[in-house]
Amino acid sequence: MSIQQITPKQRGYLIVNSHPAGSEATVDRQWRRIEPAAATGRAPVVLVLGASAGYGQAILLAGLRRHGVRGIGVAYEGAATERRTATAGWYRTAATSALAEGSGGDVTFVNADAYADATRAEVLKLLAERYGPVDHLVYSLASPRRTDPATGEVHHSVIKPIGSPYTSPSLLFDDGAPQVGTVDLAPADEAERAATVKVMGGEDWGLWVRALAEADLLSPGFTTVALSYVGSEITAPVYRQGTIGAAKEHLEATARELQTGVLADRGRAFTVVAGAAVTQASTAIPSIALYTSLLRNVLGEDGWRTTDDQAVDLWEQLTGAKEPALDDRGRIRLDGWELDPAVQDRVRELWADPEAALAADPAGAAWFYNQFRQLYGWDVPGVDYTVGVETAVPWPGQR
Image (cartoon, rainbow, N blue to C red; front, side):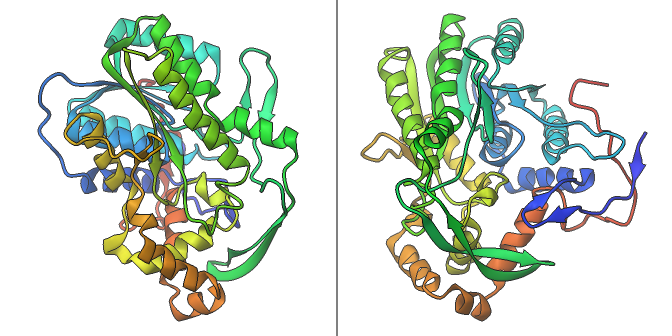
């Protein structure tokens, strides 16, 4: 037992501890927001890579809630120690597992580096022994580094523009109060661009799909999707036209290669362009916090599409209830609500003078800050942070 009363340890956009009850509550709230549906037919077998956070977690929860999926979720999270809590993703995974069990679901969670050959071997063995061929592979990994399994070389991703320096307003928080600052980034060199593609491009996705094919673990009608983002022209210099954009281009090229290669006549591969969201990955990108806050002000609560909303929409397309909403590059688009021209025109007007925009309407920035804190289980409504909580929560299946 490790009962502790804990407080957040935060510096800027970095929080190094998490709250078990708060993290569990965020998952419970997601579960309740997703409208249940009566599952029909055989339960689809899924493999979700990156199942403990962001879109990967939302897609798994929506699959469980609405389609009774079964299968494996892979995440790489840290356990509690004497000095630190477990990561928020650890606690979210425990909560997701409890909900799956309570709803009669059958999901096994593997805590391991999804980039490693040993993890692939472990997951393939588990699939063969317990679940059988995979219907849907969801690739939603975000990491600052990746070890190439072929060479052992460790590659580090960077968030930088390509070609020219980048200067932009950004959103800072001093003791929770929003302020507009400035971010200046030098352009990436070729080695940095290539390393970012190695980490965040499609190479690892391709390895997973080919491994499933070689193990005869692709079901008839197999579909795989990898999460991507395009975003606004406002953030394009540091995102879509920068090093991350180069990685996303590689991811999209990988989808086409898989479709015409290993999946020819055997399945489908798509990238999924999701809309803006407050995730642990997105908060690391300069200017995204400010852009997202202004976007929230424009759309309001009624116009905002949560990760859960988008996950439900994606499942409708994966299961054939709706035709896939493909663009001219063959990508599934979930971001029309964000990139609506009228919405973007208004965001650009606010971006022209962000200090005045925040002074006139601070709600978006306050919402962003609250959403960011909730990623780690803090500031969640209904949670009593004055009482001690058990921090040494076991990983699902480990008692």
